[in-house]
Figure 1: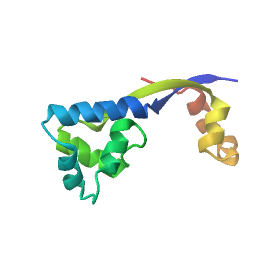
Figure 2: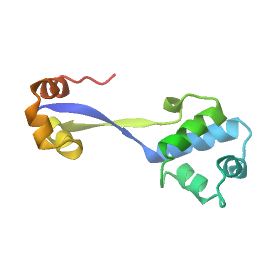
Figure 3: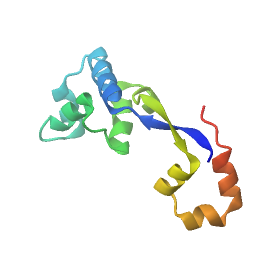
Length: 112
């Protein structure tokens, strides 16, 4: 069974980073609430506490507002998983078994 490092977003560290970046820019939670057009600020507070993460389009908008690339907002951590565990989680067994080049690429995948 081959093992690889698989990047995973750390929601608590990412939330703390969103809070830090927001404060560094002199923005309030209410500023973000209005920017996103949310009726209530709860979503922003949940992001900051790591209880949820912004959707991809909200993350994209947040990066524009904070003037940083998306990858500077997200804090990742690596988990060691087996190739079979990851394949089962994201891909059909038929897909992984049918295409040898996909299996080879997956088994030889290196994270940066």
